[in-house]
Image (cartoon, rainbow, N blue to C red; front, side, top):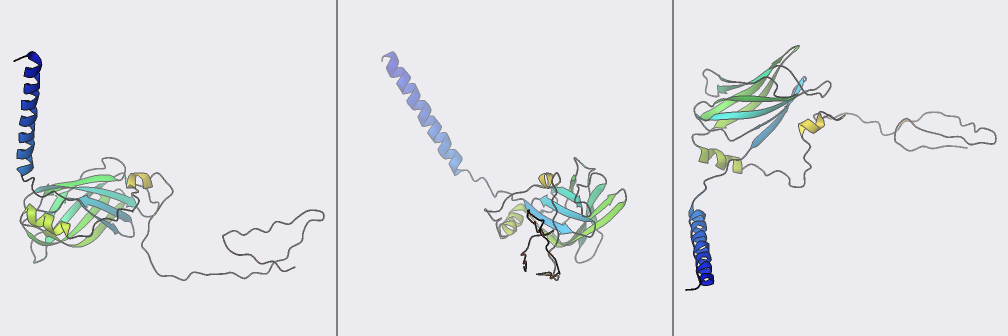
Length: 217
């Protein structure tokens, strides 16, 4: 057997071995993939945006917490958040402690989740000159990861055409969000006016806001 033949045979064996390993890997069940959940909440003092994995009893879970001051729409850069989980059927609340600001506006709450069941939960914020509470309604802690992920998959997918605008980007720009509310909007304003053009020149009529203008000669 010549040397080129040996080289080709070695390459063929290596490729065949690689294919077998790939096939074996494809047969392995990777298991369910976790999904990140998020929520947004407003009070008169702060805006909360929070991300977390599906909730499974007994697991240590980490919540990514973003807090914004409503008045100035600036990142909250001091204090600590915590999460309270009270059994819906009654009993002692479980409190998951939070960190100081990792960077302006960004905090972390981490702890071991309580037993499976339904809970009323809230995020509590304590900071210099500020004490706030976001009541987040009811949540479910599931008995196992498969059940938690199956429930998360039932939730609507995010709009793929939506434009991502991260809190870190919002905090550095003149930008703010607010809850939609009903209110009266004036569609037009009628005011008296006199136009006196400059002799041999022109007169410029401007408005302090966008709208339609009428001039009667």
